[in-house]
Structures are given as C-alpha cells and as structure tokens.
Length: 142
Image (cartoon, rainbow, N blue to C red; front, side, top):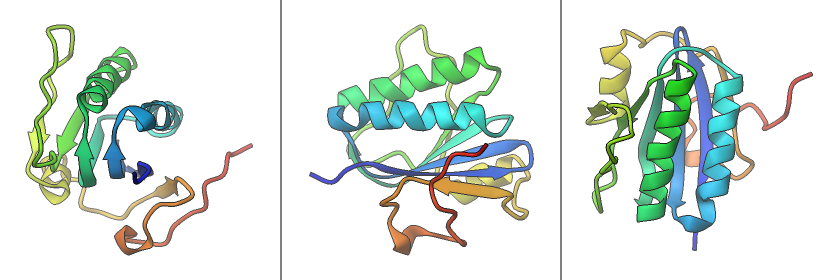
C-alpha cells in the first residue's frame, strides 16, 4: 500500500497542504503531524489539496473533519480542493463548514492567491512529478 505524502506551501494570507497517495488508517498519524506543521507555519485559511490523493478511508475522512476542528480552534478555516472520486467528506455536526472547490486553481482564485509562492516544505517521499516548483527539503527550522 502506498504511503500518504504531503507538501505544505505558504501563500500570502493562506496555506496549501497537498496530499499524495492514500489517506487510510495507517496514514492518519502522518496527516495529523502535517496539520501540526501547518499550524506552526503560516496564517489564514488552509486549502487541503487532494488532487494527488488516490483514495481515502472513512478514518481518513474523519481525520480531515478533526483537522477542520483543530484548525478552526486556531482561527484557520479548512477548505478542500479536488475531493477523491471514491467518496465525499461527510462531517458530523461538530465540524465547522468546509468549503469545497473543484480544484486547486479554483480554490486559489477564490482567495485571489494566484501570485508567487513564499515557502514550501514536503515529506521525504513527495512525488517529484507532482512538484510544481523547487522543493525545499523537509527540515525543521531553528
């Protein structure tokens, strides 16, 4: 089974967390760690780009709903781009509203964020063919 990989890119006033692979029960801890990374870096709404995701389990969908709650507690709304064809997010009543965009360009356009990227981080095995710009090695700052 393919591991889930992530890439986080900051734009002025928002962040984009892109996922690749499969968000199943074995990847929830990694996804939760990526959300922690996002909270520590950047400001504003977070667009979860699922265009590279091959699929997600019910547990993965629940992890996304939990991430929406966690981000909302920090004043950072979560939005989705390119939901996988094998299912849609069905949040429970405790989940904040999650706007859904057909793809990442539409999500960025909704925020007028089509300018240059500021910084980018990714997990070690982020697929090279999905890199849209120069990749910064996964490293902690400080």
